[in-house]
Length: 115
Image 1 (cartoon, rainbow, N blue to C red):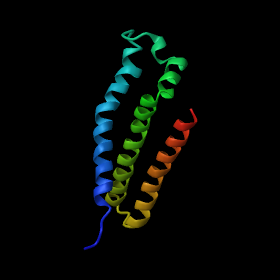
Image 2 (cartoon, one colour):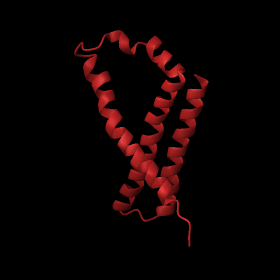
Image 3 (cartoon, rainbow, N blue to C red):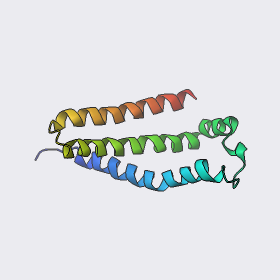
Image 4 (cartoon, rainbow, N blue to C red):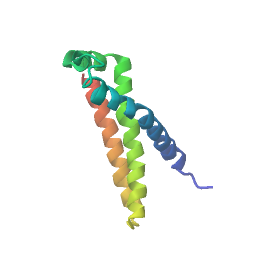
């Protein structure tokens, strides 16, 4: 029986989509609406406060998940979209899409560890 990487890719795709579906609207609400309408003070997203959040290990974990999971979701979505547009070189498309997601993951880890 041949081994498949599909369960790993599908789990990252599903988790990334679910995370993005729950977190993105909250981020839009906080950064785009709540501060502009005066529901939150303007200092809520000051440089010092955001830096303090990102320096905290839990904050780093949340930022990592907010970048890592949607990147893998987008990689799989782009792979399927390329197939729908008639690009049949699936191995090449798969390599490019998942390599970009892996690069985003590595860069995210490097940047978060340097903070």
